[in-house]
Every structure is written in C-alpha cells, then in structure tokens.
Amino acid sequence: MIFPEYRARRLRQNENFRALIRETSIAPAHLVYPLFVMPGKGVREEVSSMPGVFRISVDQLAKEAKECMGLGLNAVILFGLPDKKDSKGSGAHAKDGIIQRAIKELKNTAPALTVCTDVCLCEYTSHGHCGILLDEVVDNDSTLEVLARIALSHAQAGADMVAPSDMMDGRVAEIRGILDENNFHMLPIMSYAVKYASAFYGPFRDAAECAPQHGDRKAYQMDPANVREALREATLDVEEGADILMVKPAMAYLDVISRLRDEFDLPIAAYHVSGEYAMIKAAAANGWIDGEKVMHESLLSIRRAGADIIITYFAKEMAKLLNK
Ligand code: PBG
Image 1: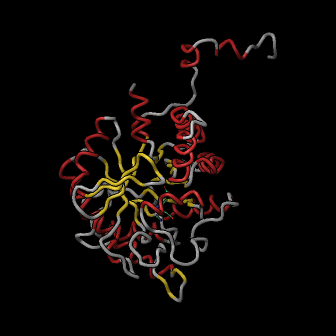
Image 2: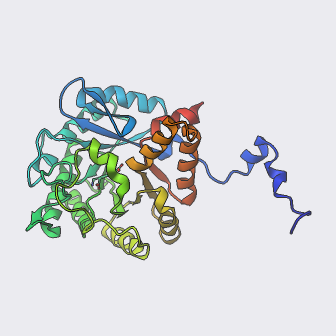
Image 3: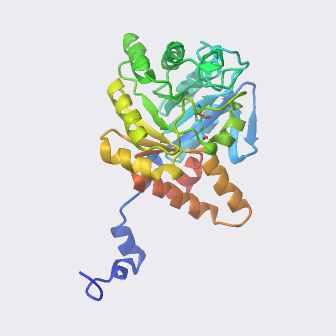
C-alpha cells in the first residue's frame, strides 16, 4: 500500500488517534530511583554536577521514601559513602556500614518500598577501584569472596534485591551461591551484565567520591566498541543465575539494549546514568532545550529499545509528569 491509498498522517491527526496506536509507554512502576547515602545527621547536599540530586544522611531516608511512594515509585537503588575508606573496602560489608544502616532505616519506615543495593567496592576502597588490588591490578578471584560478603550483608540487613556492578568474572554465581547457602534463595540478582567503561559516569564519581586514584576501569568494564561481547557477558550471567540483565549506560547503547531484548527472555534494565542526566540538565539550564520534553523522549527511547526497567535520576520528575 502506497500513497495516496496509505496516508500515515491519518492516524496522527489528533491526540486520541495517536494515543490509541502508541507503541511504547512509561509508568512510574518501571522506574528505579538512585539514592546516595552519607554519614552525618540532617545532611541534604546537592551534587554540583547533578542539579536536583542530593546526598542525604540516613535520617532523611524516611522522608525521601515517602515522597517516592507518593509518586508511585516503588523501588530505589542505594549507593553509600562510607565513614572511611581502606584498601580492601571493608566498609562495604560492615554490619553497621552506611548501606546496612540505610536498608534497615528504609525497611523500618517504608516496608513497602523495594530496596535494591549496588554491590561494588569502588565507593569503599581508598584506591577507588571496584575490587581488591594485587600489584596495582584488580584481582578477579579474591574480589569475588568480598563481593559475596557484601551481597550477603545487604541481604541480612533486609535488602530486597542486589545489583552487582563491579564487572568481575563469575560474581553472579558467587553471589547466588552465598545467598542460597544462607536461605536467601528468594532474593533476586539484578546483574549489571553489560557495563561499559564509559565517560558518562563522571558526575556519579563526584557524587560517590569513587573515581579511581590511578588508571581507569578498562581492565574490567567493557569496551564501548563491542556488542557481540555484550551478548557473551549476558549469556554468562544468565547461566550463573541472574534474574534481571542490565545495560549501562543507556542512550549511547540503545542498540545493545535492543540486541539483548531480541536474544534473551529475562527482564532487561537500563541505567540512564549520571552523565546522561547532567547533559540534559545543563542544556536545559541554558535554555537550549526543553528539559522536560527531552527527559520524556529520552526515557521513552530506552523503553522503546526494549528495557523493562529504567534506573534514572529523573525518576521523581518523570513520575510527577506522568501523574499530571
Ligand atoms: C559503581 C557504580 C558506578 C555507577 C554505578 N555503580 C560508577 C563506575 O562504575 O564508575 C555509575 C552510575 C552513574 O554514572 O550514574 N561501580
């Protein structure tokens, strides 16, 4: 069928037709809101490179949780800044560590909220790398044990889902193993299966104070040039027991999301990362783009590419827009 029999504009002529045939939707229930938790009391500190995003102390979490749930956001993911860092990142699995306290606070004050946790070492190590160093290199196998301890400590504190973001080989199996041995067989793992060594993480590293003190993360995070390798990474994580596969960042990797959607039947999450947020905020602040419309279009593109879940700093703003 070609013009003039087919006229694409027929079904575009008013909003009712457009809504009737719209292929992609976003709901607050699809979004996960990241929270940065830091030591202290009464702390609410805006991240300079991420306007509208705050680092907050544990006592502020109840209020934050209430706001999220009021907007229809059911899930958050926690990142922590420890009291002090050391070479082995021991603050990450401390019984009274920042994340462990944050989980307990949320579970006590907002039990219906789904609390996901980022399982990694970079926020807790003095060198800023995502694992244990051996001669300046992140040692895969000795890091696995520590990651498993971190995941278990989050589970014991009451977390609803763990999300390993370190990119060590074999970590999903290691974490699944320790969780199952300790009766947490119902606790899902959302694996950062396909995480690229990306320059889009810049503002996050300010927020979480976790930039590597030497070198970069290219020896463990993926090369942005590769997509077949993404399929291998995802296959391994499926075999090791991941429940959800994540792609990160999102917008520069929509093709990767789409490939994973085609090749796997597990739910797919996409992390719309700090740099993606910061770029939109900066351009909007200059009056160069309509920030709200660009936010909506960006998140829609990530859903259209095939993501079920979007982790985004825009979660509250997007939920407000959707609730209008
Ligand atoms: C920890 C981690 C990072 C992000 C999420 N978890 C930083 C990194 O890998 O350097 C980035 C999130 C963002 O940029 O919003 N490994």
